[in-house]
Length: 289
Ligand code: MF3
Ligand code: CO
Ligand code: CO
Image (cartoon, rainbow, N blue to C red):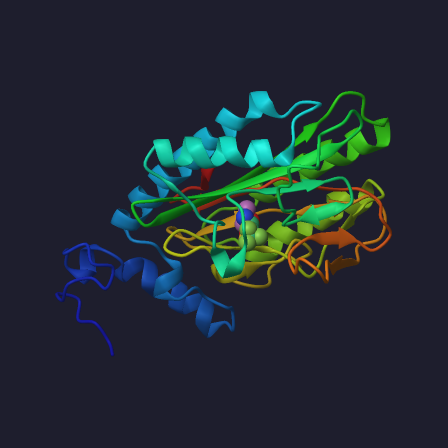
């Protein structure tokens, strides 16, 4: 199914193919001919989709901003869930995690040795020395934004503080690799390098993901990539980068009872930050942070 140069572009812009995606597609085909993995049309968002996802991402960032002042010693994770939920719906959004594959809450709250997908709980009160990841995903007008941040509660051990900082640096270094005609493997490569250089390890089983039209889309984003491998990066791709950095071993396991909470095997702490990122014509744009 070859599109003629004067036919409407596949992206739905209404423009002729030759003045829309034709030259970019030709360049992508060159990489494909060289044996590289190239993104499908679904992985390349249209202008309209990008605008919608940008707005969802902006609201998601505002949700995280809104909950931030409450992330303090003495608050329960259930209370943080309530704040996220109310702010989201008051601003016309839907918390994407609520009811997602049976997940029971509007946010994930992952403390210390919990790597991710921690479930808010009225009995879990934040105490001095805790580190917590708050992971919000917001649906607005059918589009998705996904981001998470770490918080240090009261007096946190210096090595644990360092873990939180290195995890943030990993995300920022990965982000700098996001540019057209780079590779997804470059992102994971620099993340893993930075974590291991600092004596930490990267979770392998769980990664980032395409996002925007659905919660979890292709591509899967490894945080331990190899340079020049995995998908070619092309303008219009939107995915999360969300490295989980462990102080000890990289191995993790899932809670058998709740079916969600992911823990480190050795019980040592884990830290994670997440952005939703768009590949632009000349680099990247963070759509939610
Ligand atoms: N927000 C998480 C992510 O970054 C996914 C949480 S799914 C849930 O992909 F069901 F655990 F909430
Ligand atoms: Co998330
Ligand atoms: Co995510």
